Image 1 (cartoon, one colour):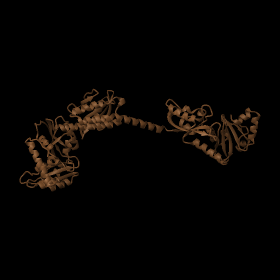
Image 2: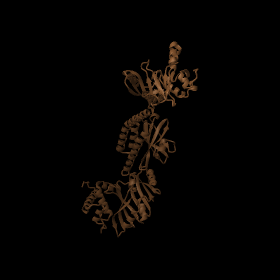
Image 3: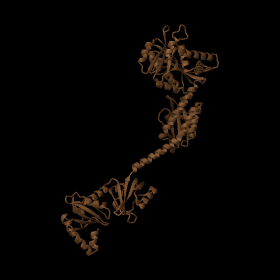
Image 4: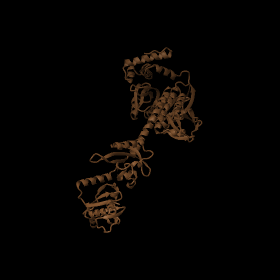
Length: 626
């Protein structure tokens, strides 16, 4: 019931006087209560064509009722607002009471400037994209007296449900009490504040609410209301929380793996044997609190199993290669393979170096500590470091072991420079030794028969990345000593990184017979498979084992080379292979010096020093520095 109806019905003569006054008002006045027209003055009955007997539904007689009903709902009790109806005749002013509303229809377009400003502000507040709520601190518990449409959209509550209540209904179990206290203190101090807190919608779903509260003062500086602005910042807040969680996880990961990386790197650098290296790596990983254990296995072709070479923290047995196991799936692949075995997560990391497979490192952890993507990167790098360390141990054993495997194979891939040159220049190339150039790269010395320097140079110029430099050409013997270099690592250099020593290469008519040696305990199969993969068409001619003598010619040469500088060794090798010690000499000291890009006196100084060291090595005299 509105104020007009109260005056008429409850106060007798006073109500009649009010009615009489309204009847003389020239603007149409209509009162509604609970969806029913309770009063219409004469101007309304005449100007709006309303019936004399009021009491009907406003929707049936007022064309603009849809707009008016919405605006009445949005108007706080005890307040009024201007409503533009889009009507040529009238706009409206809505006065909202506790039980109903009175609507005064005013001529359209004739609102005073102040009224127009007020209407614009009301419309802006109601249609603002952020939630707006107004409370009245003069009433008990500082209840809401107004909310705009966005407030309802954000929270799911409508005006009828929340007006008259304190806004704490938005709080719930996960609302931070500290943030609520900050708002309560700001209200008590009558000052603005902004907080972020978790609130609850009407359907119970949580959302992050950025709330800004500010006091509203009257002309005397007294606080009459508080206005609150709600902004749903759930997406941003969740992104911030996720970022912080990832940051915390990364910090924990880095803290954990930093020591692991350092320790494993130290093991790789300091171990004296492959078995020690593998055992120490497993022990260090198993000591990490996040992991339960680790083991290293290697494929045994004879039994077709993945044999356990070292383990720590877990009891494991050899695994059949055809078993569905993370380690067997990882041994031939580049990607990390994850899987559950006996209730424990296993992550497999291939131990591969320069295309040679040395087995697989498997890390075991409970499901809650399973290896994640960031750890995969770290552990994959550790596996590569371990494989590099194993390769270094295997390579060094070729000079220490008494038992070696000699492998002979025919290579026909034209990517091998001697193969292509022997076919294109119709000649024979025989490998002598590898040398280090002054430019820092590595080249190989070959003796060439059947082709001149010009013919060989023409054939080399037609090949990409191949460089041939003549050293000595023996006219009478139709022999040519050349220095052969390639942009990519050559066959000899590539084999050396896999623990193999190249003993000889003889290339004829597009086929190179290569003889190499590997320690008997090395993974000969993996090296040969890598060679066949790199150079398709490679045919293995023979495998044989032999025991090395107490000191081989190669070991004697290695002992001598260790006592020579690079320049001394280069001068001695060029002098010998160039026929400098023969008579008559096919090459002069000047020519050999030019092949090394040094002066003739410097060449002879290096040569004489090398000859002296050779004599000392031969006659077992103590080596002296020169």
